[in-house]
Image (tube, rainbow, N blue to C red; front, side, top):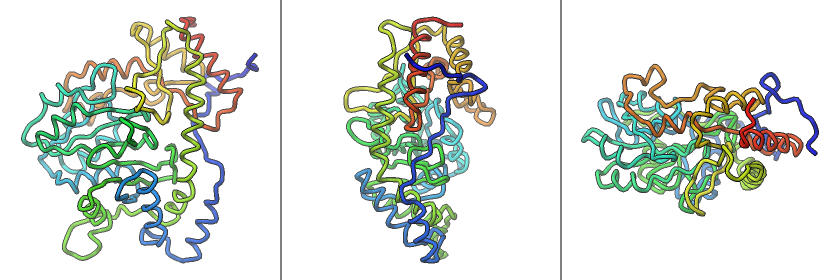
Amino acid sequence: MTPELTHDAARPVNDRYTPSPCGELDEIAEVLAEGRLSGGAPVLPRYEQALADWFGVKRAVAVNSGSSALHATLVALGVRAGDQVLVPATAPLPTAMPILTCGATPVIVDTAPGSLAMDPDAVAARLTPRVRAAISLPLWGYPADDTPAAAILAAAGVPVIEDACQAHGTRSRGRYAGTNHRAGCFSTHDRKLLSTGEGGFVLTDDDNLADRIDHYTHLGHLTGRTHGVNYKLAGPLAAIGLRRLPGLHGQLRTRRANAHQLLAALPVGGHLTELGHGDAQDEPNYYNLVLTTSAAHLAPRLSEAFARAGLAPDSTRYGYRPLYHQQIFAPYATACPHAEHLAATTFQLPVHPDMSPTTLGWVADRVRVLAEGQLP
């Protein structure tokens, strides 16, 4: 019998995860002793090599945020004012704002039914000679297999960037998210699986692209020959990332075990199932466990019930809606019924390693009750 808890809207389940100490202070102390705290600190190349090795790619370029990673990659791919960039309607603001930073125009495309992947028909319909790049989005750490859309884009010579900012360790077609296309962009913000407080990085197997990103994010290396910005990651933050990276595999195992415990509580034929994510080679990292309902008419009541239980979904907590519902992107609105349905019928639950067995048991009970249709 699960002990009685008092989680509710006023006392929600904690959705923040803080990794256990793993020697970060020792690594920071070495950086302090060396005396170089900037993005030129010797720890930076060691961190970048560790990232490249962990994900199995040629190059990693560390930067100061996930948004900087996206912006620098777009610039390095030649996106300029007047160009267009395809972006899925499911994108949150940090995914799409770098397009505006380039002076480019976001072209919002629908997702495939019940999927985070771009709808290939929508991609084909929105392609123009001005499209210079497309962004793929494994949101909530769930795979977004954009293979069909990517084939259309490749035929048109349009590179795909993965915004894998929530997808550290997610697998799609047996490969890590962020390594499936031309480049992968990550955040290491405080809420991410690999956290340095603020920060990010770009992964790529294209040495030339990596060099262009590196030059752009380091003020053109101050040669005065090329334009650049200062997106460098500070040395102490790289030190934190270097020490925390080896623990990512263990964190993934725990998140997946916790998610499977909640999924085991779902009754067969109930109102809730897991968001679909492809075949056996596709595996979420469970940044969140995402449940969905086929009973769309019950979705508002389910959202309210989750929120009252202290498990508010993103639609309630952050007002999550398709991108064009945000005022700044409203001028680029287009009909995206699949993304609208996905945003309205998904529920995001925490499954991080800090959740105690008692809390996990309590959440499993709430999930079971709501899936059975016992709505207050």
